[in-house]
Length: 418
Image 1 (cartoon, rainbow, N blue to C red):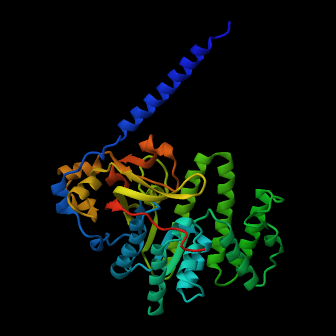
Image 2 (image 1 turned 45 degrees about the vertical axis):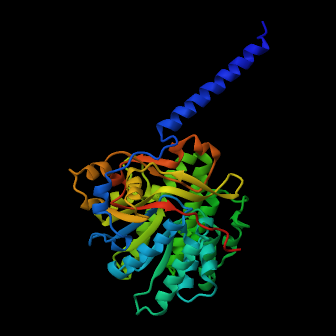
């Protein structure tokens, strides 16, 4: 017996109602239209410090600065502000970013007197988010510092990501040519900016490993050898992405943790015991729930790994839509600490969790589960109905050793480099 048309319409309307009701419940459960509760404002004012007062324990070897978003000017500007502090007060001489290793080696050569401009060097990092005035200023600072640095005190620039192929491949290719190695097999692996589909992953890996072995026997090829490792990592990451995208997220973090440890060993071989790294909060945090880069580094380094997280009260964030067009969108983090900073009149401040007594109200608040902002490199209108898509719900003091709070974060300006 055929269903009457109005029965079908009612069923459709009922389904729509259920979906909208569920979305509304989720929306209100995770913040709704309000800006959340506030931490103890008076105690926050007592413990909040200026960002230029940041210090780390003397035993620290890896100092990590997180960013709650990739698309805010303040979080990018903090890279320079905090790094300069670490250079002047902690003896740090290495900056490492969540960017393409080969591209960052091009930046490193620029800050050591290479040709081009700071804007062009920023573009070489391989990600649109770094094509900004703030990153160009960081690079300019490092180049100017090196112009007057004493022997052995120069600054170095590294990348610990493996998602881009072109620059790391070029690094390996140039090292082969400089050392008189046959590059015919290597050149055949690339088709434009991608791997040549005529070769399967095993064949590509075998050739890269062969080249890597040859480079290991040549002097002054550490960067190129590690570049070959980046190619192998990128190959494995691509395969995992095609097979299981969720597992690929974990694999990328595992590779980044390995790469940070390689950078630390490089610096230690030069007599420097500390490095400074920068990446998204979700990567640098000391998660208790999943194996992010920060958790893996803490497992390996213990208290020698120190993390400075960041968050916002309100952000107007530069984000790309699925079409690739960038747009500025406003979000609230729902972070009680950030709201207290706003109510206390701060535009930016630093909270060192180790200085806040455990038995104080603020001490309890930084150690209990709270909402925090967590915007990645994407925007969809659906995010408006699903606050968990742009917030974390974790204890701040579990993820970080300290935190920088920005109350009103302004968007970056991207596409400054053609």
